[in-house]
Amino acid sequence: MPIDDTAAIRISAFDNVPPFARGLVRDLRVRWALEEIGRDYGLHYLDAMKPKPPEYRDWQPFGQVPAFDDGQVRLFESGAILLYLGEQDERLLPRDPAQRWAATSWLLAALNSVEPALIQIVNLDFFLAGQPWAADAQPVFVDMARGKLKSTEAALGEREWFAGPFSIADIMMTCVLRNIDHTDVLSAYPALAAFKARAEARPAFQRALADQLAGFREPA
Ligand SMILES: N[C@@H](CCC(=O)N[C@@H](CS)C(=O)NCC(=O)O)C(=O)O
Image (cartoon, rainbow, N blue to C red; front, top):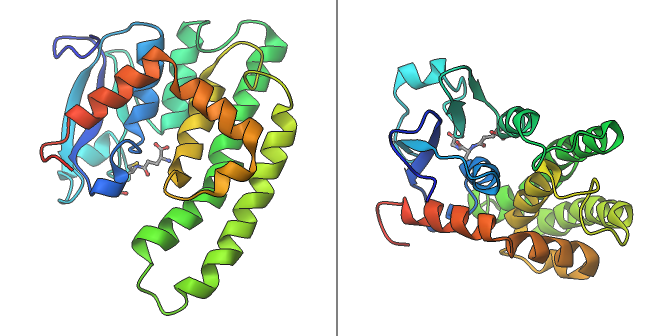
């Protein structure tokens, strides 16, 4: 059980989010990476529904989660945190330069190319659903997402993982794809859906997810 309040590593997380966000909050990416390498961590909980304490912005300038502190460095941005952990353990980031940079490319592609396209659907379906233009915008956003998913699936081809062995690229891509779990959009990309299912079947993912869900104060 890597949650240990005496651990050197501390990450920030929410203990209260709306039901649709449970299992999707981005501290999951960090918890999963830590589970993969069996490293303990403690939690700094915040309430997503309330203003963040001003001093928290010294740690995470946008008042968001996750932020990370291991006593050596304090950092924020889930991608930066995964790269930092990958630097320390080849089970997260291969040492072979070609694989290492492929994994880095795919981690950034998940964050910068795929996630922005998928997040538009999340924003529309959950935050902007009441807007009079929402129904017209939905197919446009879904089309944009489909373009990115098609390219991502083509690039994955028949490989098991994005960059050789399992890596932080696969953690990031899986978490990004989970953003549209409330839709059936991914089902049109069976190889990508199978990749996601393979990643989610990993015991480390299952433990990280269960721990995030257990950390919410109110049951969904
Ligand atoms: N680019 C950041 C995004 C972090 C982010 O969006 N966190 C969300 C939770 S998943 C958050 O804290 N939302 C509350 C807010 O923006 O105030 C990362 O990947 O770490």
